[in-house]
Length: 189
Image (cartoon, rainbow, N blue to C red; front, side, top):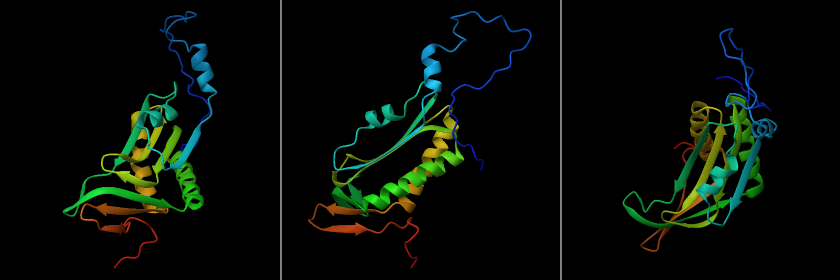
């Protein structure tokens, strides 16, 4: 595991070989003014807990950057079944101050492990019907490997560390708060 930190520039210095053709102003090989402005773009972490519907497109837009060749998304939705029972919706609750702090800590962890530009973690609270989005995690980076690895780590860490509780509501008018077996404070039986 390496420590990448955060870089304020999108471009690395390139060394041209002697056989390289001379640079021509305005050529496709030179960064444009827009690209140079993007180099000054600050990395951002977006953390949001809401009762409103989540938009995958909005999450993608939040992390898109001209510096990045990869935007990766995890989209968690409510499925219609669990252990043979028909699920009609999920209900999420969170202790918001603690949840936001944990997600910000998670963002810092991601940045220490991978060279990411932007990170967005959006989680729905309240009732989430079948097929609607419960959580979106979006990350951007220069290359896909970092983006995909960070995304997998992010969703697994979110489930293990962030105080979010999920209640499954079943078709037969019953419900069940689900124990998060991945959460670090859960005791093993």
